[in-house]
Image (cartoon, rainbow, N blue to C red; front, side, top):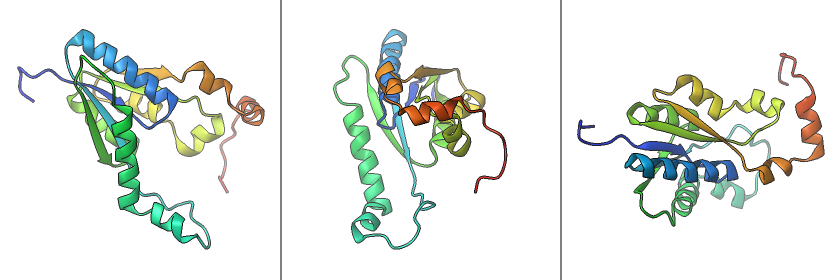
Length: 171
């Protein structure tokens, strides 16, 4: 990146309401800074949860080509309608944490959404936003999910979040 070229605001986009809020925030911030937005969607095949016989339709939808096409379609839809700021869609085959931290190396700012998963989900899947806060090469802004998304959590999940998580084997 040349000295005369401004660094972009990078934002993670995954189709969630929290990611939409992060994209909207990133566009407004980029407008103030006078730079572009790089909207990053990461995808990668993950067959870890496929057990037993699977219908052909599911296998076809899990092909790398189908997964990439679905991710591209979601990304293109997410970045539509923004005016006054260049929003560049970036599709990457990688783990979201890795893709966003890599994109942060040339960024002015990294913006990510936080869905507010339960403690157990966070322990198993990890938190993309937490990883980015600890590993990004630039400042990170974490945008909380809109209230409506957080309020829609089932009562069982809300109760689960209140139970302390004890480290142990995940069987």
